[in-house]
Length: 226
Picture 1 (cartoon, rainbow, N blue to C red):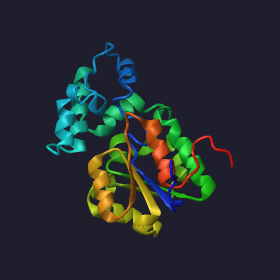
Picture 2: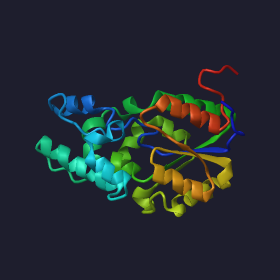
Picture 3: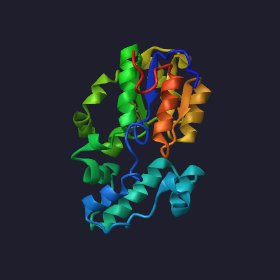
Picture 4: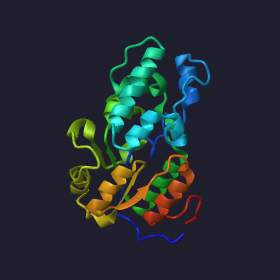
């Protein structure tokens, strides 16, 4: 695979790109919540036919937040709880050890980025809304991220061009100097409109996706020697 010129910054979405999706951890969720195996039948991008609500989100009939609010309420009801905040679900199933669901390919990639002096940033639509602000203390790698822009606080959601420009302004970099990685097509299209170099992350093929991330950022492949 041909590598692009070295990027000056990598800008990551969080959920799905840095962390595994809740779809991938159904077994863990069921065990943690005391639900029978197989209780969670919605599989989002892994099997859209099982998940009409996911298909509605992909068709822009509902927002991504709407999708997860619905799943949060549903899971709360399954365990006899009234969950109204997205963080209620994530704290219940991932609150004790969020580092366990971070993708290993992500760690390899940011290690390569640090070696090459590539700066790191996060642009998320609901980082603290979904995980809760206190979770950051359990993820020490976030200290390596120079910029974290979270629409929980800005109120400006991707794919609004302003969301990307906030990150670029904080980095003081041109769009073409940065690679943006996201697992939602609408957010990739928004970044393309701003002029960012982009990688559409496929959560069903995370290893291949991170190969593309490193190549697009001009980084050495995983496992390469220096």
